[in-house]
Amino acid sequence: MNRTVRIGQLYRDLARDMRERDRRLRVMSIGDDGRADCFVEHDLDGTTGKTVKIQVRALAYPGKFELLEEASNSPTDPRFGVLVAAITAVHRPAATPLDYARAAWDAMDLGDTADRDAP
Image (cartoon, rainbow, N blue to C red; front, side, top):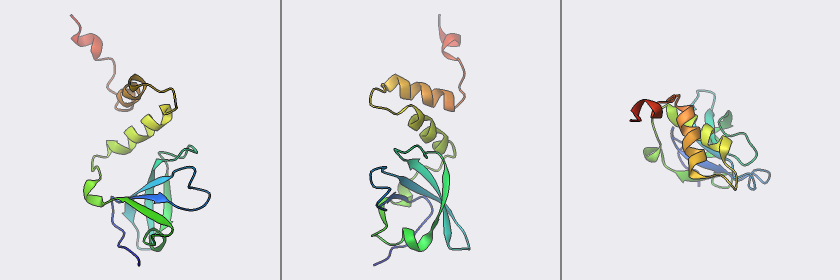
């Protein structure tokens, strides 16, 4: 049984060489050529933050891709991808919440506003 592929859905790649990498793809657009532009939200092999093209019919087949999240739950803010890439760049076993916060702060180019508010 195939499912309908929609913009915003999140999939886990079930290919044999991708399972250990835990590669997750968010559908960003679907082209007339039958391919979807997918943003790599998570990949333990380091391709997070990149865009890849995947055949829509492959995404629709549950044996190839596991649907993790429906489109209605996906973020619509374009900065989402920037944040995911920044957080992934610092992700490691010893990462602290401060590491993630700094990565997000820098990715949003918020500058050094903390000093401005200090007494």
